[in-house]
Length: 236
Image 1 (tube, helix red, strand yellow):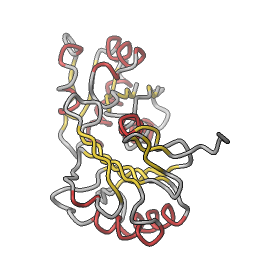
Image 2: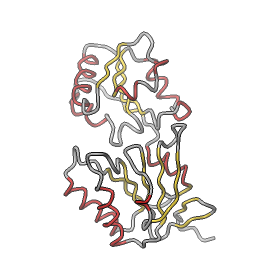
Image 3: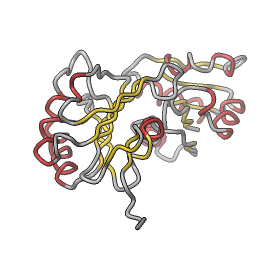
Image 4: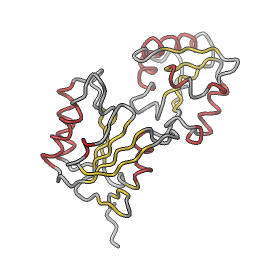
């Protein structure tokens, strides 16, 4: 099982996710995610790896599952969205059945805090070039901006790539108005959430890091009572 923990706060866990973890003999995950559920790990075998230990984690989990153990691999957000589901399936290659248990992804969590910015077509793009070439991401940013999508940016800025968000904004400004609404949500639904509503022109004046989700509106997105709203197209 590959289990989505959502944003991390217990209220956002689904009953299915809680049941899967309870039923598991082995729980595997990035140590930061395991620290969210210490009370659920009693009497269980634990596989904890650091960041960038995804391949090792997946291999260990699949080997234990192949040996007959019930294994839950936990992933933040939704495991099928920048999570562990894909790599588990690649490593398993049909040796063991894999069940994916969805969770609330950062785009949904941030959007809920901002209002209703994702009511029409949108694109989600990660600015981490650890696994995807930067040149590919530039093409995707260009295409999404040209298509007038609402754009959600994951992993927008880190110490190793402080300027990717600046480049992304420059591409957005080629196709979007400087007054386009932008929402910046840090630690969405984690108990320490901060929410900023600004514009494409001014967005870089605010702190943005790896714990931040950035939502950039389309040409129809507007602000109503301090909330972002992208009209679905209903006649009012």
